[in-house]
Image (cartoon, rainbow over all chains, first blue to last red; front, side, top):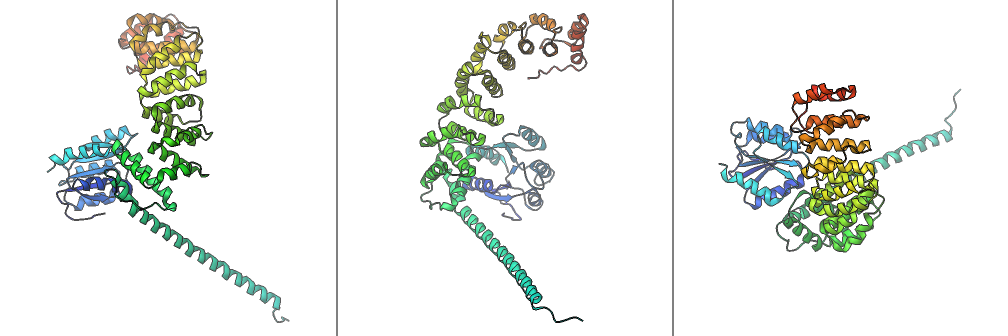
Length: 132
Length: 358
């Protein structure tokens, strides 16, 4: 995990507990010139929210140890410097209600697994263009 | 008086003590060996990840210039991660890249060899890999495995065939779907949904016309869960065919009711007074979804049917007719002279549910 006290303007926080998925997401983001910070569980993600300056975007899995994705969305939205950060959630195919729950909790968008890398990047670019 | 210890007892004690030392030493050696093996496995795993994870990810966008050979002990690991990436991602780009990497490393041959492995895990890995690889040369082997008595092996092989050539695979698979009661229905539904309504309509339509009642019932269920409306013409033909089993006819009407095509109104009406109660019940239910004000009378008549299920379906259908108002339903109940008819309407008056239970 890359723990830095100051997130660079090109930083994206990935919160995902599956190492292989992390490698894949990191590769896709770094290819586009972004720096990825990774948290592999909910507590670590909360700690990053408490200590880091806001990244450009948060890519957040739903199923995570300690704190799930919905709790983390609520937590991020309650944190003053982070509340406006776009959050894109990664949800499992079969869990349509997760999508509704994620959007209700304050997520900006969602991507269903399995996903098309091009579609994922297109969705992220939509927010990265407008994010400060 | 106590004499000197017997030599035999001392020897026995020495032997017991020696034995204990040997056991403890063996246990210690075992623990050290296990630790060594575990460390070695972890090192190999880390080495494997360090080598192959970046190459697998890279292959999604561009073909790696050179790739190291996959060691024989790493083949299963490689296939596991390769399949993981296949299952985690969508899009033709990733298929081309990952498949090129697999062929570059000789994993197509390795998978074909594993098809004949004794272990179930190895065979399943091979089946899934060959499906993702769209390996046409494995077609015959996979078709044979799709008829295996093992439900997981056969269904995985069926899915692999579908990955390789959906149209040709469906011609083979659909009759098997009808025949295999041991195939997991959600998995079969997922498999058919993956193929798409357009592709499954024709083979399903053809098979329902010639299948046994049991098989047809199963196939109609899959038409329902995959919302395959393009197969409706075959369902209509099956419904009106003289020789069609009554239970199948009821299933056809259920499907027609679920698909809610107004064109089927006349057809449904023609079964409302059928001699079989299952058919009458499903015709009533279907009228509840596509019925017109003119159908109110025939549904009211069914409120006094001898069979509880028919009465209940008729009451439910009346309550769910799109134009039905609670006041009119109460009026209908009031007009009934038959106690059974009055009773069957009661729950729909006290707890009206305007949502149709489709």
